[in-house]
Image 1 (spheres, one colour):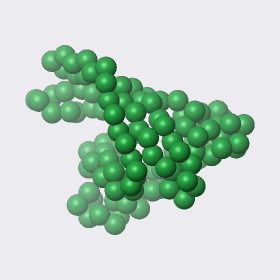
Image 2 (tube, rainbow, N blue to C red):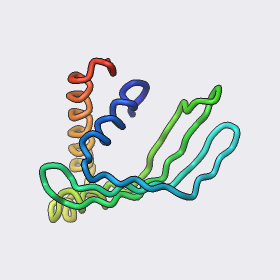
Image 3 (spheres, rainbow, N blue to C red):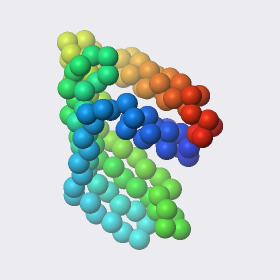
Image 4 (cartoon, helix red, strand yellow):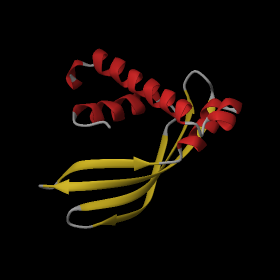
Length: 120
């Protein structure tokens, strides 16, 4: 779970680190208290040169005209197959590997926040 300034930092980190990042979106549905959208991210995974094409469904909650909740859902096993190759194909479905992926992402975000005091 990422909240507040950490969510802003995450987007900053992703955009700054993704020199070839392409984001597209469609199927946007809105209501007074929320929205859903499908979006896709295409990029080359840093350090590996592996192409990633991640398809995500986002759900947003609104309060006082602002987003107060944002949840992304995607197939982490599919992502691990693209990002890790054969190990992702063979073990990316496991909770252990998925936990390691989440932990690594969390550590990267923590380092990014430490280097960017505007998010602390």
